[in-house]
Length: 385
Image (cartoon, rainbow, N blue to C red; front, side, top):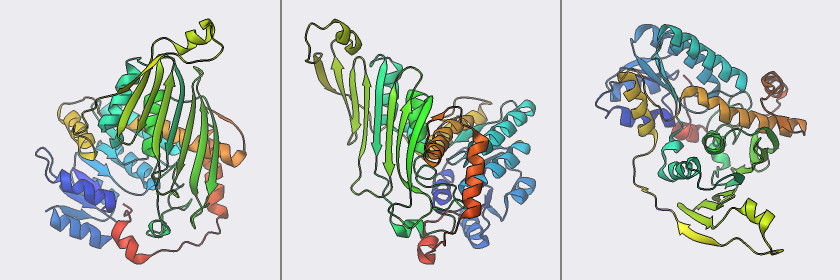
């Protein structure tokens, strides 16, 4: 296996990869020669300084890609063209058109190599509390879903964080703010739990609290074809933040907050009660239940990678998240921003060409002058690959 990008995440991946019995890290790549050399020496591997050379010379069977967002697409495509299995950090791409190119390259490569694996690092799907919510919803315990409201403002970032790399918090370097960097996991979980909305209204505030040219506070409203509505509220400016999800269905309300899931189970259908109740007000009888969750179950990046490697070795199998699924959360993110830019409701599927043109316009017209704190950059920045 090879790894591209020896930054914060890449270095973290290397630690557990080096301890896996069925994996040998034979190639490490970074455009910063010193980083590649240091990591390669530490893990007894071969250093490369660009992904093309890596794919041509290393003989790897699989690659883990941990580089800035725009580079996910060309590196993934290059790997597929060589018949190499890909596990990519989130997001799959910056915009939907690039995601489509990545998926098309994967599907073409699969025609020659049907067991080719493409996974995406959505490790939050492995978290026990998230899996329990998924299990409850899939089991139909709430009946018809009415509303899902997710307030996740525990993404606080200081100005120092944004100043830690040239690529951070710019349209040209990162392609967005909180929706592109912090929230791909949240948007993936939203669509994983509730499916894709049909209509989106987004309100994205650009550099409201930080000296950045991308969004740092977002409120979005979703409408689903089945009548369910969703609310999505995120920011990198609140401290202490909140992480609270309310899911309302005809048979009660599920609340996820403070590492606990509470189910207010109603004795009968709320929708039926609305039509048949002989009282003008009042509530359906309901019971408070704390849902037991095995919180110590294995989870995180290593679990995603374990499943990926297992699928390769077995010639196929279930991944935590298949790469092409990454387009769903990305579509929501792009739609939120396009709605905010255009001050209108966006109906899915999104006009991917319109969004790409808007992004290109933002890059071309940018007058933002980036400040980089070199000391912080050495500590926490990703490396391009």
